[in-house]
Length: 265
Ligand SMILES: [Zn+2]
Image 1 (spheres, rainbow, N blue to C red):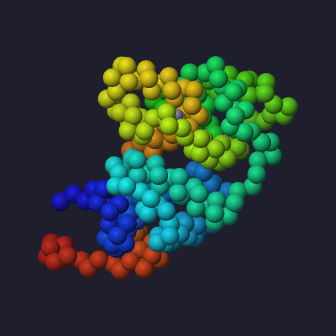
Image 2: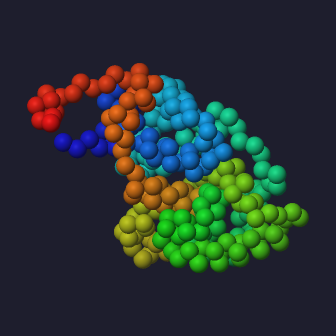
Image 3: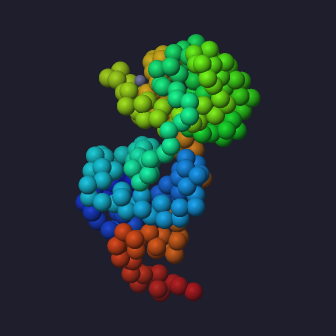
């Protein structure tokens, strides 16, 4: 019998241990990779993941409270947002030395197409060109070319500039983009359909026409592509590796089933 992400969300919302154990087993590896990627400077904080997990587990945590049952990719995209916010709440990151706000960046990048903007936006998500190329399914040289062009455009808007400007401002830019949703914005399903080649030519045109001019949708689309990329290679934890996390959340270990005992070597 297959236990789906839909059922897990329902069980976690209802506070059922089975849902949470599954959540830990399947998604702690994804959370770990996101932490390593977005907060490398906190790699020595070995308890960070457990603390953040405990914060998400609290009944008042909005991770499951506000979440309708959803397919896995949409769920993990939400989890990413909650995880990043939980780490910031745990300890706020330092402000960047040179600030770049979303409006300035959006106006600098105006001449770029949707995919060109995605090549640039993934730089705010701290991805180097090879990783961004894999996530976006485009050529790494194309990513580099567009980032070079964007750097010139952004420089033209600012008095001071540095190579790491987009990455330095990534967290704040991501929050601003996420908060800038409009009624005309595309739902996640539209982007998933685009990723899976299930949009008609006309729907794709409409999506691209809107998203190319909308920082919220550029960010949203990039995050969904990021999650799809993460899930392609994510491996669940073994029960032994999941045990410390289960214990931290006070989830009792499931009894080994009679069948498993019977067939154990
Ligand atoms: Zn939009």
